[in-house]
Image 1 (spheres, rainbow, N blue to C red):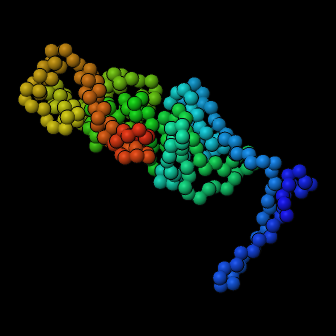
Image 2 (image 1 turned 180 degrees about the vertical axis):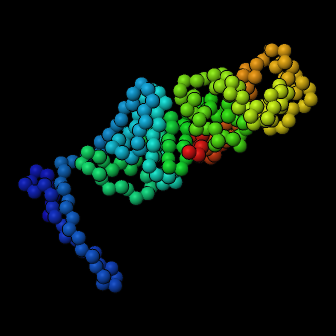
Image 3 (image 1 turned 90 degrees about the vertical axis):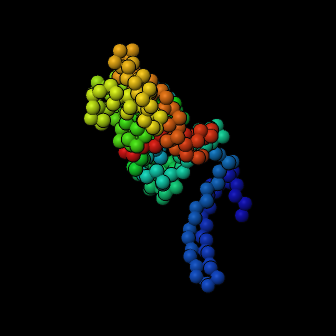
Length: 267
């Protein structure tokens, strides 16, 4: 038969039987709808507010545009159950590779692909990804590395993100670290010299020479720098360490190769 949209039969019921070489078969009724012409599936788009939006991925909207503010998308599955890619416009695409969930009701669509626009955070059941490496997440990472070292990244990332998302800049986060004596609690000393040595090793990777130790300690002793302003200076010098300890969702880890470089952290 020739399926014709203009005819009085908009659909056909087909009874198909598939038989394998051993003679085993299976049969099933299928309904084939006839449409006027090819109509691509229209993408449903969420447009965010001027503030922080907290969205759920793979739920009703295929395009999530966070707009202004620091916007997060939560996925109710592990990060290894999705595939990341870039669309032709350079936007991040998250595709579900695990089994789709059944539709809950007629108002919800079983979305399996999200295109993300102006989204800063991705939260999975096992880990989080901060996409704003050059924004607030980068500020948090710099202060963490300068204050506690690269190895403490996962320990402090979640509380640090909550602070910068609340509106604090790099200097203000450094003030907070110093006011609560977080570094002193780690090094178990309040001396300026110990503070200098700790920051230097976190940023440079080795202990300072005696001349460097004496020079930076003198800046604290004579009031040229406060502990907070010295920490702020140290944090600004950790950009290469932030990049080296980032993950590229699509390309090579630790390499800013034009793909999607993110900060990965445990939840």
